[in-house]
Image 1 (tube, rainbow, N blue to C red):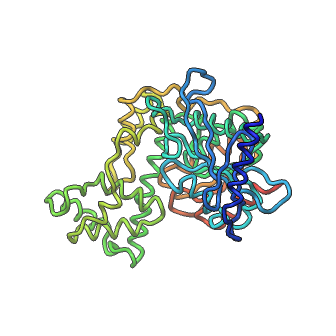
Image 2: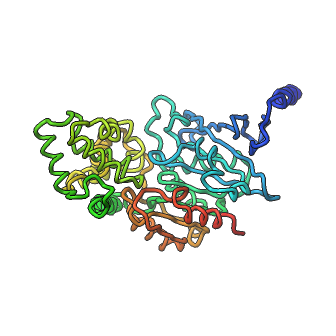
Length: 414
């Protein structure tokens, strides 16, 4: 015990020698808070928590999950607010905390903000042999471990995409530990993933049609004169090898994820025009590389092999309206080569207390990734607050100002 006290004293002495800018929102002092060692890293603090790959299994390997904290600077009894990023879209965990005040405004300073990296990302690398164990229910277990290590009875939450789905699973299983939650574009852990996928496919199709209508009605769109004709021209150019060999409609679908899904349809149509005029690089830059098996781990962890096969087939059967968005058919097809999930979603039974919990569910009405029908019906069934946003993009909290202000107000309410 004396050694521990001495070591802690040395750490504090060393930290006091660090120069602190007046604008730094948290004091850069190293210390042990409950079961987590927080170290200064720029204007925020960094910490890690070690959790088992499989909860309750003593022989399980462990994964080190990074967390990033910004202490409250207003209010006498600050609540703990967990920020849960999506695995594929939006900011990573560290960026969320570093830019919390810019994103949410000064109202966020009334909370002790802690962002938690999702397992399987570069801030929470899985042990060798456990790379596929990154399902939603495992992430929900990680959140409970974080709350326990912080020694707080309740946490507030903002989750995006897969992070929101993990928070949903946590609330369904253990609602008493969540003070309030804002869930941005979650899927429903308690209903069939196959049935939900059909809704997502419909939302993707609508997203393409909406983007094309937008282009046709805006002079700023390079394909404004005749969108369908320009897309047909691209198809001809691909067939006649007049564009780079990497330009395919699969590449266009990937490029749509980085443009249309983020609310920037103009960038996609502009890059298609540029490709038809002889320069394929902008389009290829948006498209990136074709998905690999590693990219499918998260999806496959949440479905059985049989359901993955059905979802892949449903996506492959779609006849695109000129083009589609994403690579879901290819990604779910990889599940046949991956160890079957031991904890698929679809059958989670919400606890009685989950109904009527303080939860706000947000989504854009034109979301091209998560069909609004899915979180809307979930919120209605569980008597949670639901608010859609008139926007054509995926994720809205932190992107739409009114929605962001409302989210913080919801969490701050007594």
